Image 1 (cartoon, one colour):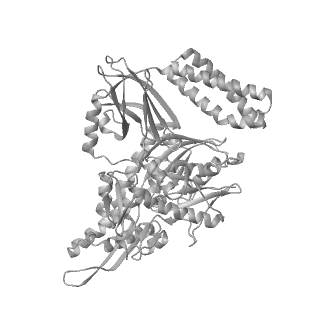
Image 2 (tube, one colour):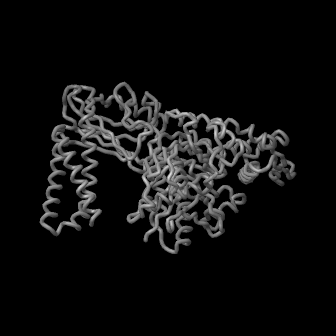
Image 3 (cartoon, helix red, strand yellow):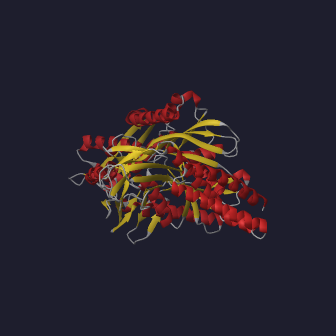
Length: 610
């Protein structure tokens, strides 16, 4: 049977797992390690290296060794995060043709999804060597607070790696899945996930029936172990500058050695009270004299250097609890995920915040991949009842559009369970308006300009009419991967336009501001028609489910007169429901929703018996 692998595509390390005989197995690479560095390098001879091989030569080939690409994925070239990485990375980051980010390997510019694809391809290979068969499907995890561009770019990376990414799931949700799977527990759980580059907190309800429901999530996609390393690097650089008057950041090889030494010191300080950092021949002085770096870093000093970073995670934990409407005492279990949670200060801070010691029941580096593997097995046709799980995840940030006055009109509020779709009817705001611009925004600010612009499109060909006389229906949809699509339709002429919000084209702030100004001329005013919208969504969902089972039912009963008659009646119900939607006939639609529900129950019964 075809296997679906679960991949934790991490900032620092990646991990792959698969379910075999009902239990998840974390797959070791050729070196026997269960995690693989998320690093890619190109040698002088043009050979591509991934993982441990890339890491081993990072110091001697600093300019052509790429690490932490996940911090750049789905970001615009002009974002402050990209600027920050550009200033400290040992490799060259350049602007791409769409205002996106490209990374130089030797003399070729690669997009960030391409670099991530190289890591995913390595994980695919590790799984294939273990399983002895080709793997084409995967569940890949992303930080819960990743926006739509970052999710889409991760999915693109999977495709480039030759993987059909059948589901993107959030890392804390995957961890909770691994924690609760098969344990028959009813618990409210907090997952604190501090990895190499990103931070998330999710509050979930785990049900004994296999339902994992996310109540709230909060995070920061630019807060992680890299920032802790950077504090140590800065401490070393400033100390060296004070002693010798030279800036080590100007030398790429020295910078890579500093990064390597800082990461090792950070890890060691979780077990010991102080560590010596010794880097001989780090730089030459102007007089051709070899200079050495030697300093002792204590755990207390390291905690002082990074205390504000840990405080930021505490503030985000509080936000997640507030959004869930819970007190810290309501949380029954706390699960720590990510290598940074081994840091004693982090562990103490989490324990103090929740008033309980975190659970030791999961492996912080492997648990996310395990959860992805479990989800992969559950999504396969023919999965056993023991493998069946229901994940009810949420969208981390509000989605909406700009309306008259430059305000953000929310359509899907944050922490809404996905997949979902919401529709609202609007009217034109000006006389004889023949086009509307739909600006798709993500964020919590009331002013549209303060949120992130995900995409835009124009619906043209509207009939000329006084303001308020032309109705436009706008539908926002988020699928199970968290990918957003938006659809607009002129209800009178049937003209329609839609957009799947894909990886960002990289607009500058000035361009976004200009678009928002232009958008004010095309702005729509809201019109409520809630009852019809609720029925329409319910009917369309039922139609989709009935049509999905149609062929299976036809194979089971299509040979009998009774079966053919039942299929014809079902087709009639679908057609009448669509007609009621087109006519916006609420009474008729109520009848067809009942008829569709009866048809779906009958179809499910036939399939179960067949």
